[in-house]
Length: 434
Image: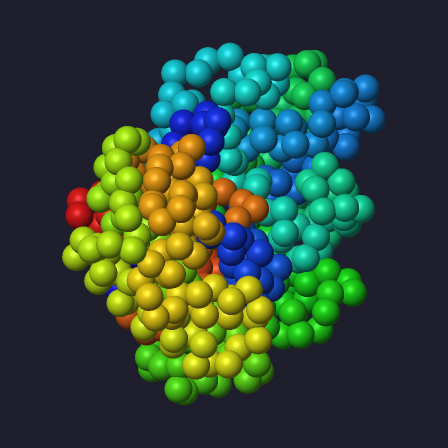
């Protein structure tokens, strides 16, 4: 089974994004949250560590008189961590480091330089942790934005466990990085900081224990069912690693204790398959249009790839509707996709797109983000975070279409058990030579 995962590009943002959400971003987030509550875009432990450390350092630097915001500090620390990892040497196709092209050759490691726009990627790993930090109990949240988070006692304990024994110039890690933020030192190219920050290094045993506890317990006051679903999902991916037999949607695995959880995983997978089938139709139509001047009559004779895509879309949408799942927008979307007339289905899809392709009367026309058959795939990642950059989990036992959070939890579970590199390096080496 092959999966396509987004690869982050240079640290720039186009004026018009080409991501086709089909007005389904909230539904996508909801099904992912039902699959593994509170995980966000996290797939390895140091993502959580670097973001939590960013909060703590920003708070310490503010106490020293810094005006740097939490986002700027966290992004700069992540950029420094990736720079240190690159300098230390990377395995081929390493996925835990971003910005390898942007960071190559950078020499000025002052906070003022590292925190500037363009030094690092525009979508740091931190963006994937915004949901997870408060849900897992690493931070207290006065609002939904990262800048409203405060590192709490569990977050501090996690930082201390990861950075144990790493004392740059005899200083506590947080203190040294706060001095860096305040411009009091630029000495950050050190072995101690590499050992503390590099995303490619395994978590120390105590840190792995604390992360496992947070995954199982979550934050104080978290809804009990969310905790159960996340814990069950973790046990399921561990069972798959241990050789549990493949499953189908007709046979709920013993590790998933709630029937409603399995039903949500199933319905979510069928929704994702239908959504992706709709994207295939729009891709085929975009290729047919090809140039900004060309239009296609949606009520006329359609090219073969578009007709084939519509047939697959109707089948996928009908499969979702047969589950009877109550997700309102998903049901509305799939109902639109089984309309008897091709022109009606295409009209709904064009209205939901409106950015790359749009409808004018009875014709499909280029939209403001049209580039002639090139699109940025929405791989099912939460719409509020960067595209998922985890390696594929090529276990044939995963049911088709299952939430990307299950794949992420597969890798995070390996990290918690100290087995990440044993599984990751063969996967990345194969990808590099495939």
